[in-house]
Length: 183
Image (cartoon, rainbow, N blue to C red):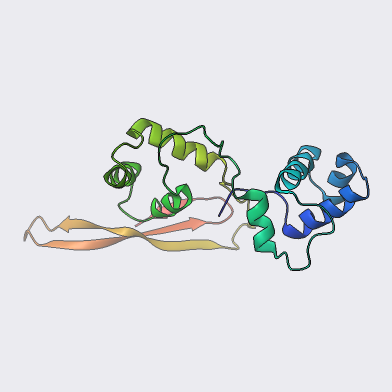
């Protein structure tokens, strides 16, 4: 996924149509329910990409998104070292047992002249800040409980017999209060 954007493709098409009709960025923002600065940024992207209303009939949403947001957040010619695909690294980081050190070591195995660990972490955190990290959800009290296993097993040793067994950790969270219980 290229970068976080605050408008849907339908809204971007409507924004371009309104801009062609000489409607101000402030009024377009009111119409679409977003900030004027968001409209100005997206109009600037469209201008840079050479897009104007009416758009070609065969221009799909995916192609439009690619043309507008493919290079967002990357300053051309600014970084001189090979960079990994930050989006795929963010997905990899969600897997059990994977951390930034492991990802950096894999990166350096492929690119020995690449970034050092601290710069690699800084660039990854910079990428993460551009993502939308949260989604607010309101749950009425007593309505929902979220349950799952933690994904990692712990070893339990019976002191009397010395037998070692693997045990799952069960986690439950109440939706309204976020009260967490692990067993």
